[in-house]
Image 1 (cartoon, helix red, strand yellow):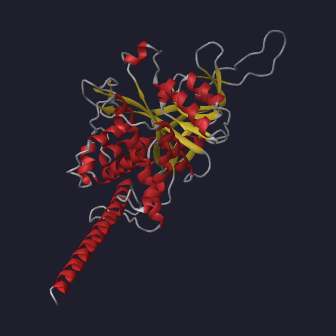
Image 2 (cartoon, rainbow, N blue to C red; image 1 turned 180 degrees about the vertical axis):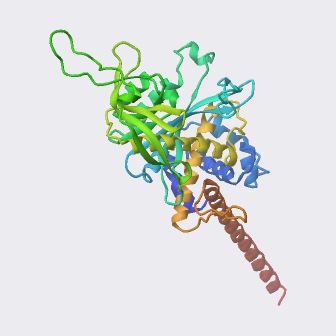
Image 3 (cartoon, rainbow, N blue to C red; image 1 turned 45 degrees about the vertical axis):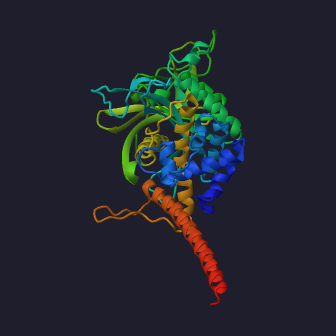
Length: 438
């Protein structure tokens, strides 16, 4: 464990409980050190080369950490969430999205052909081969940045329909997996106020019902033809009580112009028509109370935002600003690809595949947490150039500071070993000269 300084080891020490043996934890520390110092592809051999372990004959033991050793990735996700809870203030805000990891290989059973959301547009469809992941992250604001950071802590692969496991069990979609993930999070945090933010793919009845049962609030985007109804009035006369009022349109809501915090820390005016109402999902006996309405960002560009759950005490400004912050998870995906080598790993074992990608996402969160600790000690400065003078920190600055902390520790260890070696040679020389009569 001497490959890392104490300033970094103190954040990794809680993860020792998820490993069955201390040797496995020590190997994981070595791989994490090489992962930080490595550049380019993040393979096990590249991590060992970054540490100067070219002559390691038992290199296969480090591969066994991912594809064979017994340790719990679920407990690791819980430990990352506990670290993130020490940084948050107020309600816990979680952002969910799906990530497509581009992978090839005949032995990868979890791969399938999906739509590439990054390369596709409204008029151009791009499909690629890869693994689909449901990523759950925690939204945290820092004083050294103008935007909030979406820090992943829990991700699960969506297996294709022809996967061998689905021959023995029912096929589970991304919504089914997300509902299970939220149940696990509620088990970890039984008394925490939780708010979930997702895009239009998560405007589903099952997810909204699950969030209501778990006492969570879901903010998502509804379809443009979503059926919003007023609350039913008091019962008059005979017959059963109505379950919904008249259907609402934009003209039935009061218009309001609100200033919100937009991307990049700028302020923007939006027109909104929002009120508390009922969302009729089109299925029998499914009526979900929501705080929803039409939000217009520019001309001919409006959609319906909705907050579903028991706690609907939100304002229009809070609703729109929270949905805008959802985009920070897309920035996380991009930075994981650019700086942490996401999609460059080359594991083909089923167990190693389900472990490697979550480890990379959690490493992103750990780098931000460690960088925030170094920032408090005034060890992180924004990188300035002649053409780009930053006033605030970004992930690249934090990652560089963490790497420099590791390099400094390793150089100090090297100097210490060289001084001990030279001292031993000097003692041997002095003894030899004394024997010769000098």
